[in-house]
Image 1 (cartoon, one colour):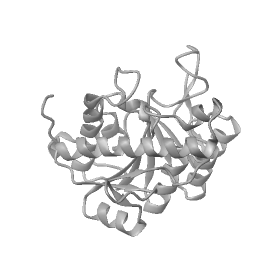
Image 2 (image 1 turned 30 degrees about the horizontal axis):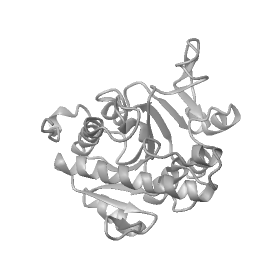
Image 3 (image 1 turned 90 degrees about the vertical axis):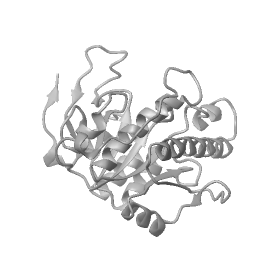
Length: 259
């Protein structure tokens, strides 16, 4: 495995727009070209993107889904009791958080994992003031186990933590470069939006995040920025206010579409 290093600050071009952000990454992003589990090279690549952001002076916290290991909703649809399935999904997010912590620390970033389900032998319990203190000390914090409760998605967990941490934005790294009117992989004529209001996302049922997460971001006036985590350097561009993405925010911020 090639050695990975944190990029030097002079490689991070321009100033950054956001001081503190929460990066939400799907579990599937950690699979790489695999069909299941964790691809260490994929994890290291994302860790390098986070390293770019930290080098630019941004305080970063993360929430990582668990779909590469276990999807609670899918298991529930097959007959498993929903709460049990959701708890298993939460444990999968802890595994992914530990993998990301290992990758981040291998490139020199001091990192803490905090779990909403206490498991003192492997990570810290979630304590809001401690998490804020870690960020202030330039540590990267990974929030695991969602909200600690079944019947909530990791999107809702990410929105909750972004609000609790006082983040300037919630960045959702996906497999595509923004929010579309339909799945662009299935519909070639799908329209990509540059900007949307919270209300438009909910009214059009665009499903970029679940409704409770979007509502929480609206109530706390935290913009949601959707971009492709698969493209190298895109996170750094988004933090600088550049790059291809969709910004979900106040109605007055909405604008055109890329057709």
